[in-house]
Length: 317
Ligand code: GLY
View 1 (cartoon, helix red, strand yellow):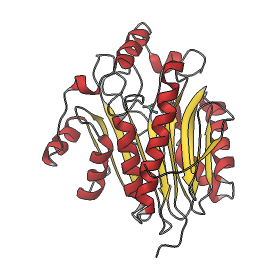
View 2 (cartoon, rainbow, N blue to C red; view 1 turned 90 degrees about the horizontal axis):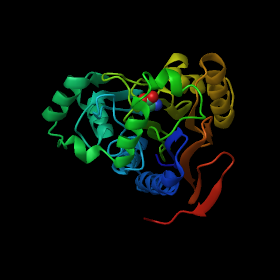
View 3 (tube, helix red, strand yellow; view 1 turned 90 degrees about the vertical axis):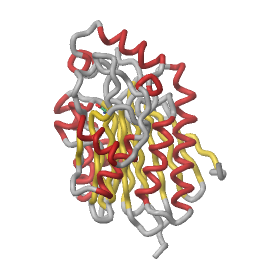
């Protein structure tokens, strides 16, 4: 039964996005939110909408996911992605996967075609081969920005511990994500990332971990997170937000409370996007910037810097 107003929200990562990527980041999230919203308007499921939106963000070199992924310490691309259907809590994820353009699609295949939730590394690539997912050479996923970032961070022994605790000297960009509420009243989320520049090979962040990189429960709400993965995992950021919403907080209050608690308990910074099962939206970030956009009833809201909330009419893309 189609009696719920569809809502779509996306983010393009919470970090100190450099000025030369600012416009591309805003344009990218606006395009992706329209792509997801269009899927919802056709009456499709939330899980299809988040997959479509995240696929588009993975194709956009402005973001750290798919094409545009940052490089690990050895100069390799290792990507993590997750998708979850809040209707029945089904989920699929991949981690440390290489040489594919759309890790979110592979995560969806894990959800739909296996008994597992998370497949990593060599196993994830073997599964991709089994599913006949096209491989792409690493160079196709690597941008000049990612190479510059690796050079910058390589001089520090541990990017995560020494640089990502404070926001002031953090360059670059992060994870992408989407949350959708469909006309049947179901919620879904998807998150995809290349991780953190100069990470150790084999390092997995929060993104593919259910309850950390996101969560969707159609009885409560949906969340996608971005930011300092090690901090996000320690406090299970997404599930924390769901918990606050269950206690009666609005999506905005829950998002702000959870990020405040992450800063207080583990000195972590990041960003979140949230939709409640009633279609109310929350978004918050404790980094310098986060590109975000949401769409409901034909009105698009978007922004990049703290306090921004631009509004424009949705037009079919
Ligand atoms: N939030 C992405 C990561 O830490 O890998």
